[in-house]
Structure formats: C-alpha cells, structure tokens
Amino acid sequence: MPGIDECLLEVMRLPGARGASVVDWTSGLALGTIGDSPNGDHEATAAETAEVARMAAEQPVFALPPPDEHERPATGHERPAKRPGAPDGPGIPNQSGIPDPATRPPSTPSTPVEDVIVTTRTGYHILRFVETAFDSSVFLHLWLDRAQGNLALARIRLGETAERLVLG
Image (cartoon, rainbow, N blue to C red; front, side):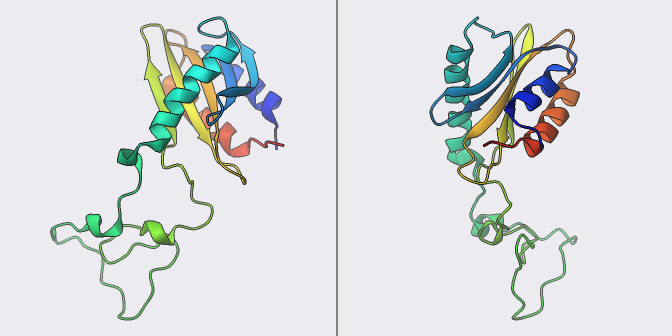
C-alpha cells in the first residue's frame, strides 16, 4: 500500500496534472505536495482548499437524512416487505427500500461527501476525501489542466488512489 509520496507521484502521471497535495482539512496543513500550486504557495493552497473541503464535509445538506424522511409514495415497484420481526441488517434497506444510516457498517465513510470538484476557466480542482482508521480528516487535492486533462478519468483514479493511501 502506497504512502503519501507514492500516491502523489501516481496522480501526477494523469494527463493534465499540474499539482497535487494531501491535506488535513481540520488544520489546513499540507501533509505532502508535488508539482505546481495555483497561487505559487503550496501551504496557502492547502489552507484555502481545506476551507472548501471543511464547508462541504460539515454541511447538513450533504448528510444522510433520517430514516423517516425516506418515505415515498407507492409506485408499484417497491421491494417486498421484510418478514415481521426480521431485523434490518447492516446497510440493508429498511421497509422503505433505503439503507438505514443507523445500520451502516463500520467501513462506511464518516464523511458523506466523496469529492468536491471546482471548475475554473483553465482547470479543475478535485478534492477527494480519504477514509482513515483514525479521524478521516484528510483529502487529496489534484489541480488538473482543463485543456489537457480528463476530469472523469482523474476522478476515478483519484478515488482509487485515495482507497490505497496509507497514512502513518
């Protein structure tokens, strides 16, 4: 499993990659950087992107709604009702057909946001949250040239890299 430096080298191989960093979004500190920075200062960029990540991660609108808000009108395509007395298992849909957030398995991300994409006239900034064993307050930031990069490919690869990243 790759560490910070290996992951940063990996994402810089993406077409159009201009710069990348691993940032702690609670403190705004860069844990590792590579390539260019949009404003010429990796530490300032880390602090600024951490504010964006923090705003997205902490907004209630992105949180999983309570189970009682999942009730929908009947459409004729509902899942069969569970047996009386059968418990909803971890991550198993309840009678409304929606997984109950209270039964999420331990591996379910604590931050409901997977990534944030900011588009500028010349580039893309992808902030991909990294799930960790301790507090999940880290994200990968990739600055991608808009003319040379492939946003879909970058998002997929960044997600794969985030899953393999080992912090230590």
